[in-house]
Image (cartoon, rainbow, N blue to C red; front, side, top):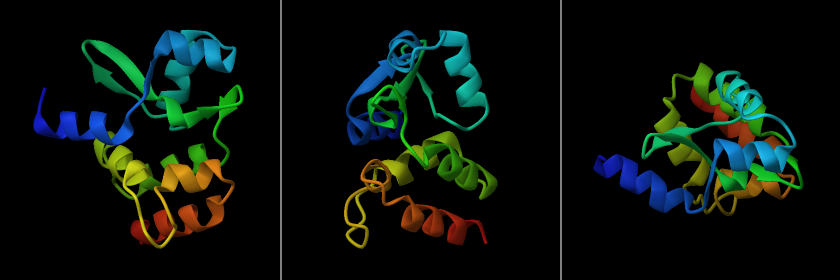
Length: 119
């Protein structure tokens, strides 16, 4: 495991396995893999298993605005690791991390920032 992997794990905090995410969303693990492939969710390999930040799922659904934000970051050339860092790094001007702003239904500003990075 690289230092970057440790940084991401510490930054994100709570993780879910594919199976746990599938249960939380009421779908199959294969559907969760499809969500990851479609940039609706983001997962990384930890210990040989794909894990998803628990903060990406709330109330039995994917956090509102997350899929569009992840797509914008991917279009801007962000790797999965870079996107995770960006989503979970606190930003005093939001305030909080972008994932916290999305969860608080303040997605417009998050997407505006992600879009600005794509330019």
